[in-house]
Amino acid sequence: MSNQSPKRIIPIKLERKTSLSADDQKAVHDSCARLKALPGALLPILHDVQSALGFVPKDAVVIIAHELNLSRAEIHGVISFYHYFRTEKPGRHVVQLCRAEACQSVGAVALEAYAKRTLGIDFHGTTADGAVTLEAVYCLGNCALGPSAMVDGRLQGRVSPERFDALIAAARQPS
Ligand code: FES
Image (tube, rainbow, N blue to C red; front, side):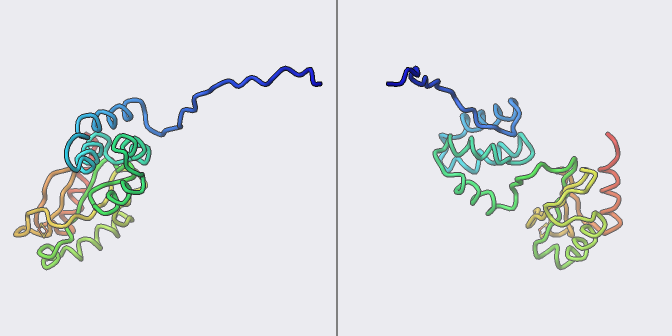
């Protein structure tokens, strides 16, 4: 007969590691608490989280999935369907170029090529210095004044390459 004492099982609570700060976790929980009773709550929550954090981090998806009783795959499906949502932290400035038809007819294609070349990034990319993130949008409601762009939420019309350079230079100025 063994004289070893029986093994004791010590319950431990495993905390899941998260990349979110305490403030960011609170922001996501607050969005869910405020909006989850709405019909189709997922989209308003994703908008709210992106507005608060600048993007929808993967660890925010974990919280949202838990709160809405959805799978992470379902949420990722929605995020990837809408160009608007970002899953990576953006640069200090976000430049959105319109790719819709009216702007394309007045030079948006050439502007897009110019922007990508001069910034050295593709859509959804951020410059190496973290200053500028480039994104595509599909009509900014400024069709008569294309090519149109949105720089840090401010609408810009008739964006020539020269004007694009000026907008980027102004955005990069220290505030
Ligand atoms: S098509 Fe570009 S603003 Fe409408």
